[in-house]
Image (tube, rainbow, N blue to C red; front, side):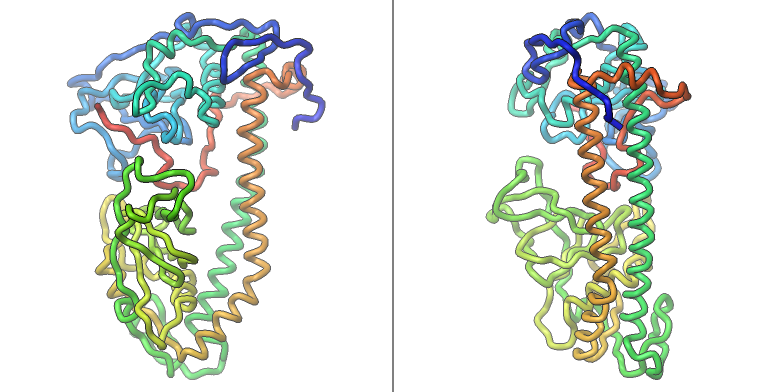
Length: 453
């Protein structure tokens, strides 16, 4: 994709700490000559506007019915956003997943955001891409003020931005749209492969943890509608007989760091690390062989086996192992992966969620301990190749996303000249906005959720 791309022949100092050198023919213009702050409250007409939100996927129309996220109780204080406006979150910048977005929608957004209109709408695409690249690496720290790392709008307006001529800006945007499309296509193909492999893995595990390894074993009804028959000599029990079930704990942003003593697991299907906290901040610890279960959202129904001492957020349910000689944590984890049992018991609310009571009373099959060990060993052996491919594919997706981030930064700051490459591209109707789109796992950090202050 970048074969043949070269740097520009000459560069000059920009005077900007976040983009030190730019092509010598680019201008450096104060933002006040490019954008204008615009704040129009919707007032009593708020029912006529769609609610928008700034996310890693760009500015999206929010589904108010699902109840997800935060917004002002007084919608009249929201401000109007028009298609083509630039939406910025200019405080808590280091912690905010996405601080800039070019809106493709008409609607309204909470007054905590800052809305700008581009004086020349044709330049909005490049402007958004430039500040998205700065946001990806959080390079605008010289503009921060105060404990909340706020960028005052007046300071941002006075800041200079590199400005290629309009034709070159169009070439940059066209090239990056094309490049993003190819990267998206590659990522989606890999995500499809991951989905197929996970289905195959779940089928293997489901068969092993519900029927065992002996196909001719006599069966009996399990008494569980979604499970069906099980080997006659297996038992059925409840999670509360083997695990102490409780909620994770609430953490403030100030409690979390990028590194530290104690990992904090998030409510995702993989139990990913959200951040780190100090041990004296953790009230709900989990340790090796305990389990963490997402309590709400898209990941509900999955379980993650804890590998070492950690804690988890309030959007998770912790299942702390009660010492016993009847059920291994490995088998319990495999049973959860193979059956997603909590999908059958979640509370019917706007956002799917499951309570500690539902988890505690959820049924689980209990084979003899020697069979549990044999079943887990067989699963590990049969799924080993699948797991290797999954790890490799997920790593490849990560590299593609890193490549996209770096490519955008190199092109919008003039490290690579794409004018000739863009001229060879087919002229096709495409969206101006480049976003992570559907290739990002939906998670609690996807949306920039801010409240009025």
